[in-house]
Amino acid sequence: QVQPVESGGGLVQAGGSLRLSCADSARTFSRYTMAWFRQTPGKERELVAAISPSGDNTRYADSVKGRFIIFRDNVNLVYLQMNSLKSEDTAVYYCAAGSRPYSDYVLSGARTQDFGSWGQGTQVTVSS
Image 1 (cartoon, helix red, strand yellow):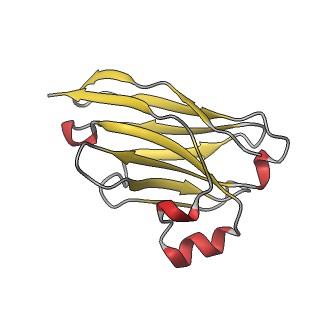
Image 2 (cartoon, rainbow, N blue to C red; image 1 turned 90 degrees about the vertical axis):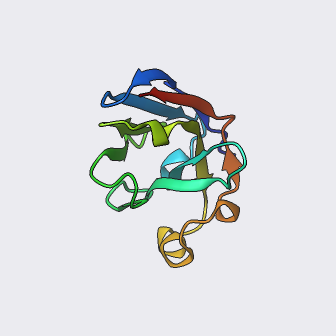
């Protein structure tokens, strides 16, 4: 059973960079589609980025394209490199794992209900 644990959140100035990490000790980690979501108070949790089990395929929310990069080492870590941060990126960021084929997530739009395992979240605050 995958149980993601996030780290790397914090306070950063607008225009700066931050890297989030998501670790899991499950031996089957490399079989899971992994994703980063974020949520702000009063809003629904939204997809930020997703990556296929092989790491060959990724997708991003339009709001972060060209600024964020998701990648994985396929041992037990997935990362979210966040560059050119904006105040609107302030949120709690969650790592999620899904056991369905990556193509399913592409078709469904990678909704929160498609992912079965979640981390506890890490706060990212971007000061303007």
